[in-house]
Image (cartoon, rainbow, N blue to C red; front, side):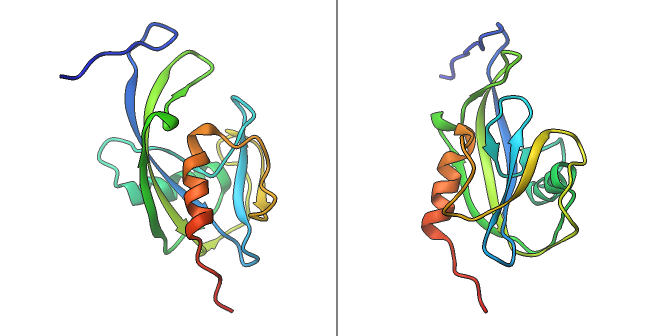
Length: 152
């Protein structure tokens, strides 16, 4: 039997499905952005809209948040669990499910389309900015453990 849980602001906690892409550049660095709301760092991604495929959502979020158009991408994994739960500054809480892709195929130059990021850039995997968003730590660790070397 499902139970109802309430967020700090009194609203019901909701399950939120998101789609994201870890974008890797030609030097093997990954695209990270600093969130405006809490100052943590994350890869681009966001909530799947009604009737939207997760692939379309992931590409849309990268474009909206970073200005890049993503081509081919490969599924990293589907992530869920308590460590993906998040309380937003307004007190809303979500239990996150994150479908994460990896892509090295993109065009454009990075810039914020929607103003969600305070700053963004490509960072070497051994020198990622901190603090990493708790909502992304599990996925980034999986990416680092399973990362495929670039073909020359």
